[in-house]
View 1 (cartoon, rainbow, N blue to C red):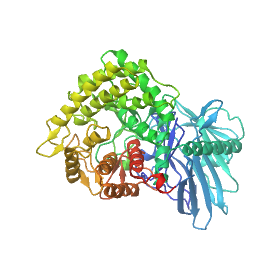
View 2 (tube, rainbow, N blue to C red; view 1 turned 90 degrees about the vertical axis):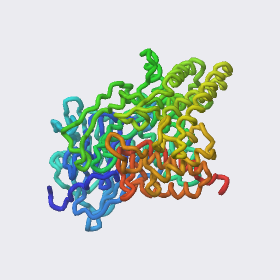
View 3 (cartoon, rainbow, N blue to C red; view 1 turned 120 degrees about the vertical axis):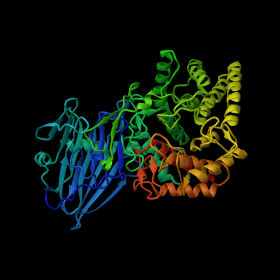
View 4 (spheres, helix red, strand yellow; view 1 turned 180 degrees about the vertical axis):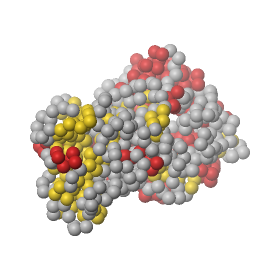
Length: 605
């Protein structure tokens, strides 16, 4: 290591995300790119330093300043363009602008498998170093490297990347420090010829990408309060869309532990029907319809594919290209986040029966039947396909399953699963009325009514004075708060109010809420699950405890990372983020809470 260059920052989730709805990358506070899967979200992590243990010096892309003193990082307002400033002890500084190109071109969105990094001096002529060390096959293989006058090729068995740069290629290859005397640009992407000059292309891509995101943000229907938080959450959700198929990933990462040394390390780079429904619902609340239309395209393929298999079962998650088999395995070539393995690829939950999936499908599709803004208006044919999903919901409504928390060794009739089966029937009745199909509206309405009565009766625990996590059970589970959100029960019903009090007493650590109280496959959960805290905020607001809801929301805003992002879990004692990142569920919660709690626009205008 050259004198004057600091070691890499230790792994943390103080990361920024860039992306373009094809790929994404995570960048640490010192501008080191530590995670990027290529050629798409669920691909090989060509940059895998995030899971490389402490101070990994492989699998990252660092742009460093000699005699480092401090770093500052921000997003360009209302964009997914990340800016990092690095300053040395002599007062010299440089700026790194990172993004993945995304903009309209030739009647479609240009969103290549490409990362662009632009570097310019802010003051003086600091000495910098570029350290670009991609790896293949989950960190196991170093690439074969070839180079030309303005490019470097990184050749792997299944993927070849080409870096175009106007910086000295020799210095990039060797990692030799050099003075930053002029702007330098780096474009890493497919092994293809660049149409124009490196600098010209990078500048144009930045301008058009910035304009795209600002135009996209401008069309959002924002709440009056907390607009910065909502905008950042909305952009992050949009970045989680794999636009080619319409799938939405639950998170960009795999195997970030839910809690320190917990072994609760899972691969979230797939599309859960549950998580995706909440994403489109949150974006719909901001009048962002494009993601819904893309997702409905993916969802229609899921429904048709499952129906044609004959048994009606829909698995709770699929690969972003509609892959149904996602076999779970442990990778031995990476030690894991902070050395806390295992690193898992694939997710065994694709084999689960999680009966809430049927409600999530119908709920996600329901708005399309009522919203005339959509380019494609669904009709009787689409409704008929959804009715097949409803029939499956009726069949499994009171059957044991793994539940929304994906318990691997315990099956029960989970209240949250039954609730979503009820929601499927309830929404089908509403859609039938919209389509002027009175007989079918009556049929689905009667089914929903009968199911709702059973849920409220059989999940109620007289002992706990609360709705329990399963029929006839007594254990508490935050997911029952969804009863009010999806409309099964009036939030002011004494049973719901009592349930909220019980959950707060037994599941809350200060403002934060855990998922459930019973032990699972790994013991009792020790961290708060962020979406549960947001469900609590919603329930507080619905039951008239608005001041408390705002206080809890402010507490959640305070534990975001410096760029406004959240992972899956929050440690109640340290406030540290754990779990996969950035977590769509958590960013959904930010939007929902802000929309519900904000003062109205007409209070100031």
